[in-house]
Length: 210
Image 1 (cartoon, helix red, strand yellow):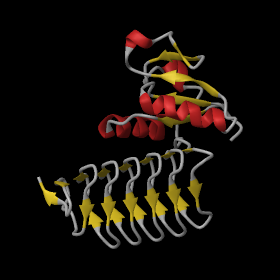
Image 2 (image 1 turned 180 degrees about the vertical axis):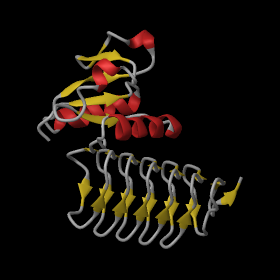
Image 3 (image 1 turned 135 degrees about the horizontal axis):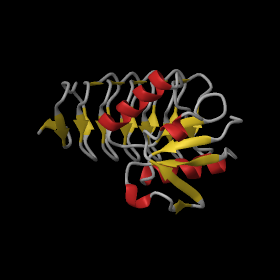
């Protein structure tokens, strides 16, 4: 990646993204964040420039500058991604830690945040705008759709399917072949041995609906 990156979101995910881009020798142009109290302050010597819809900065995204959306709230994240698609005709770039392991045979989309020591094994499929926290494992042939969050140390076993917007808590295990429905949530440390319906929340070992 030759162009500098503008990071949307100056919270924890933004700071992690900055570290990843720094480690990969990618220049970060600045942050955009809607918390006005942090405008014109610095994070690791990188300035928080303004709001996420500031046209003065949005207009540089495209030929000269890339974008990355580092926001945990899925609704807000989707809104910013849609704005970048429609107004700037761009897709956010990936932020992939140099100490993660992503197989050359895996399929990875756009706008994904993959943290240190995460593993994406051969023939796994990861969609767009996912967050894969440190030490999480996406095993071979597993499928992760758009806007999914996978917590630290979680294990997504072979052939499992995580539908759009699913949330997998830290240390959770999704057994091979299991489907986690759209916007479903799996609590930290849970072991999922049966399909989880869309929009539902499960917790425990074995995981039960809450």
